[in-house]
Image 1 (cartoon, rainbow, N blue to C red):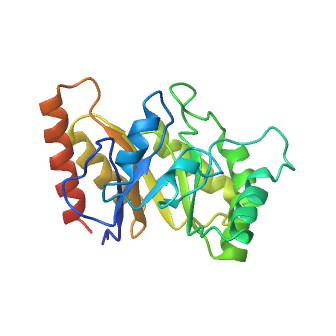
Image 2: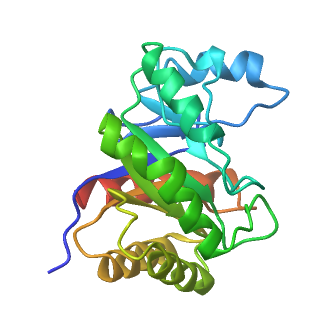
Length: 225
């Protein structure tokens, strides 16, 4: 039977409407960061990621989740592992890391990494963080398109049992019905795996439609723990 364990919520709204330790922030620096950063820290957000391995100084006070955004050009590169290990040894509490941002996508922020290269990089730089430091690992965050499921299948095949993510991130851009359906499909495919929704939105909609979408999705996420 499919089981939901925990679902962490990313929100692009400045003020969350209910208190929940699930809520985190996908942080992107912008021209408004000098004022927005103060707002983020006054909400019920507890953690954030910024598509990078190093934290954002203005976000101190929120738990940082490093990400291996893409794969390095060298198959011996250890930059991500060394950076995260340095944070840990320096006293930063790292409980989670995220691996590869939309590797099945080659535009609009996708890291465009083939599954075999991603598996090799994971085994070299990400898996050791779990074995040595007990860090929980987020699987590659593929797009919400069908190519995402195919890419993940190829990734786990290439891993040959050597990649052991603890949770699976989800990305979705579209209406609530599509989001709920996608969450259900991911859960049915990867039964009993914790899911984090690390990117979601209803693009190009009015303020009211956006607010309604957020309220409906947040309520849905809170119900399905």
